[in-house]
Image (cartoon, rainbow, N blue to C red; front, top):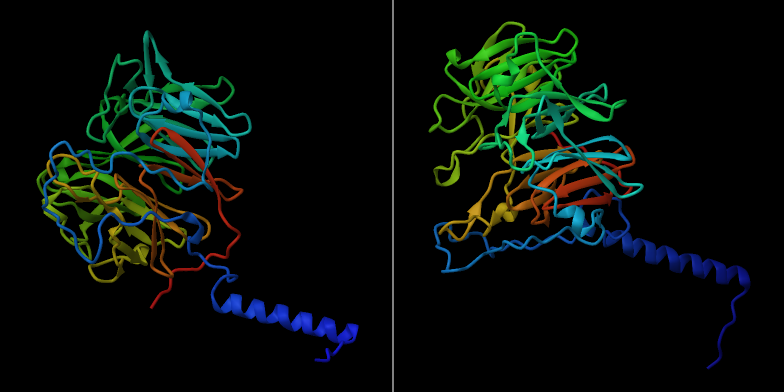
Amino acid sequence: MKLIKLSPIYQRIVTILFLLSILLIGIALGKFLPSNTMRDLSCIPSIVKGGAYPALSTREPNARGFLTAIPPPAKWETQLTREQSATLGRITSIVIRSNDEIWISSTGGNGVRRYKPTTHELFTYTVKVNDSEFAPSKIFLTKDGTLWGLGNSGVNGKLDAYFSGAFRGFLSRYDAKADRFEPIMDTDNILTGLSVADVEEDTKGNLWLAFENGLVRYNPHTNNVNQMLNKEQGYLFHNFAIAPNGTIWLGARQAPSELERLMHYDPNTGEIKSFGKYGIPPEVNNRLEFLTLYFDRAGRLWVNDYGWLENPSEYAEYGQATWYEIIQSPVFITDRYGGDVKYGWFRTDSIYEDTQGTFWFSSIAGLASFVPSSGEWCLVSTASGLIAEDNKHNLWFAGDGQIYKYQLPSLKATPIPIQ
């Protein structure tokens, strides 16, 4: 058999054609296409198989269930030593003041922590008032870079005012020069008597604080507090979110035993309206959970993992905002439910959107990602915690006694399709 020897030019052409064919095959298989899918996150399979699960099945005697947390995959780099991890409680907030300042708060009275990634050091902060020492139960970062502490969990077991998800009133502010939190007492000493559940900043730099019987507005420049909503309106408040136009959406109920409903409040007119349970199904097994509300980068209002409201800032009457209901995923079904019931479906308690348009939901079941454009869900870890992104597109996840760092791939964000 006689072999044909190609000239160098033809050899190059054949090589180029061969490489092009490989590239086309790869594109056809989706291997080289930029995507918002989380293929490299090593998703944890659902603990239930098929399209249903035995919701009322009982736990076997002495069965501990899925109590041992599965950490995020290897690409999520652990940051803390075993000794550092042992000092963290359940994470209540995470904020990033700079790429070398990761702040977290947790339960248990262990203080607010500042993590320094360049040296892997972990610093502890408390608030001292007279002879007492307090640890803020939650921290919040305003747009001007001010770090606020909220609540007064006791240090070393001296005082534990953390109860049932509510952060007792006691406002503090981080002084960067002194490197400590300083207590803030408002003019009329109103804040110290509140059991605050949520905090948000409006477009004018005011802090809004939700507590069970109302909503107050705190002006950091004048140190004044104004009562905006109270129990006389007939509602109990918990979580809320401020729309880009300054109006406020709240989760509220008329009695502790009622399911929570979505409310809309206009601070300029004082008008408050019920959005009812529009698009939001009843809770499973009569579990009275709070609504988690979140405005994304496009101004859409997300409600738990139920869905989002399109154009909520233009809301006037029922039905004028379009509700998009999410096709729910079994990633939130877990056998970490506790008690005699084997399985539970937990609603999310936090929502976060990264710069690529991926949404991150956290619940007792763990941390899950959701890509609206593809409808793809991924349970990344059974660790329960909170997530934030720095300006270098690193995701920082604090949960189950550890801090993780994950570098987002260089992908182009895909917007949510609107029909």
